[in-house]
Length: 106
Image (tube, rainbow, N blue to C red; front, side, top):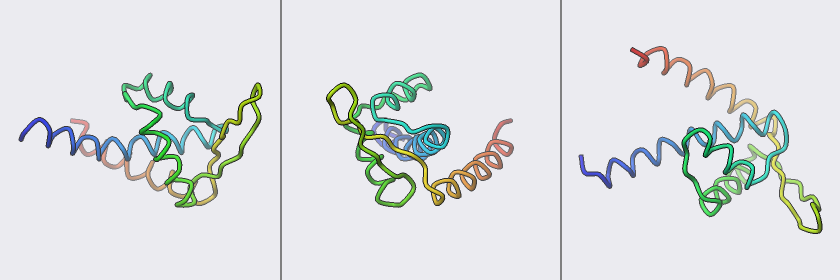
């Protein structure tokens, strides 16, 4: 398997993991882009805000997140919170991820 194909496949796979991360944190408290980029970096995902923002926007249009604009030190910052649909998707994703992990961990 060529390196670029491998990267492309892993990128698609990691996109799902990233979305689960986003839902998880948005359930705990409202999140914003820069914070999420840093959080993902701590988990080994090197993702730019240019990559993250379209993901947040599409998750919002899919009804998984809701957006609230807040004025923070004179700048408008967009905060995202999980919706009830998002919570259902997160629960389902957790169950599936757990099943998969049990199967492949050895």
